[in-house]
Amino acid sequence: MLSHDGKYLVALSGGADSVCLLLVLKELNYQIEAVHCNFHLRGDESNRDEMFCESLCNRLGISLHRIHFDTMTYAELHHVSIEMAARELRYKYFEQLAHDIHADGICVAHHRDDSVETLLINLVRGTGIHGLTGISPVNGQIIRPLLDVNREEIEAYLRRVNQDYVTDSTNLQDDVVRNKIRLNVIPMLREINPSVSDNIALTAKRIAEAGKLFDWALEQKANECILEKDDNSLTIDFSLASQNEYILYHLLSPYRFSPSQIQQIAENDGEQSGKEWLSASHVAMMDRNRLLVCRLEERRKSMIVPELGKYVFTEKQVLSFQHVTRNADFHISKQKNVACLDADLVKFPLTIRYVENGDRFVPFGMKGSKLVSDFLTNCKVSLYDKRQQLVVTDAHQHIIWLVNHRPHHHYCVTKETKGVLIISAI
Image (cartoon, rainbow, N blue to C red):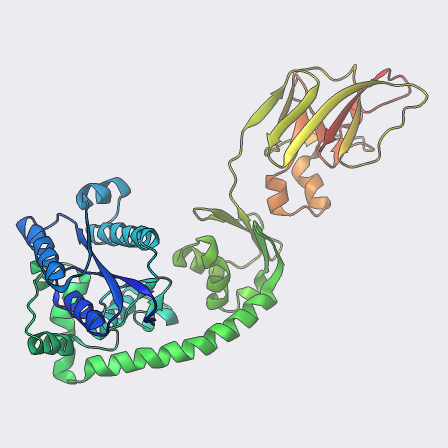
């Protein structure tokens, strides 16, 4: 966990656990600095804790970093609980401070009983296999050296070295879930088996070991379900992935889909093409027994094209409009990204926009009009690409080009055409 050549930041609240951690690391001659957060949630008691930490560090000759938070305001602004607000505030600060002082890690004083409480909380709320492994000893920069030590051993150590500590009065009130577990549930379980905490901790370790094998097998099965993958999208064989909800969770959770959404997706029969689920960053879409996962992009509604030139609709969608005279040297382009239209038939201003429900046009080479959605389906265009499909319309809002596919038949170049409007998707 730790190197004697390293430098470590110790989270110091003033409670027994963090005081024990600070003393042990100093006794073992690690290079440490302490950090204390005052969340201003307990009035004078919060200030008492800060003064205690200052006095302790002065006596031990340890540098102390202090910060004050308006936790209540943060919780209100971010619509989170007080507990979550305090957690977010302290860990963000810990990481920034560790970076500023070039610390190799952040030591926090979670112990074995904390890990047991976490396991029980996760079990009550509903969890996967990893929620039954308790707290991780190392998680990025966060290091928990006391994770195999229980609260009784911590207090016994402090008595032996004659070191006092402060007590957070809110820890004695069973008003939050963790306190209810600590003050009510675990004592009841100890009546059944005095070694319950030891046994739960041992079970968590065994589950963690089994979890390594589970993760390996899950990775193999999940990879078998991936048809295509790049930085922005993922295509999954839904018939394979839906055989086990764990596979879907493994594939979709990195894209910020919630467990309830993943459960809904798993319960889908795979036949409803077009059904969508939105996460904070991605959209998942059913498409002919495939599940497409794509990054959500800001979609501008439309862009007016008042005259010839180059128009940047998005970073990846740039269209060029130019006029040429039709002469003996002119040849109609056969490239899909180029449309050659009769300039006299096209009335400006033009509009670039995404395809909409009910859009129709007469594809070049056909006589009757066709729904754009049906045309794209016949071309086996994926749902994601349908969402990104652009059209160019004229002043009458008639589609003159289905970009990168077909121009409208009535606007195409004929023998009578004198001037040609060339639209290119660059």
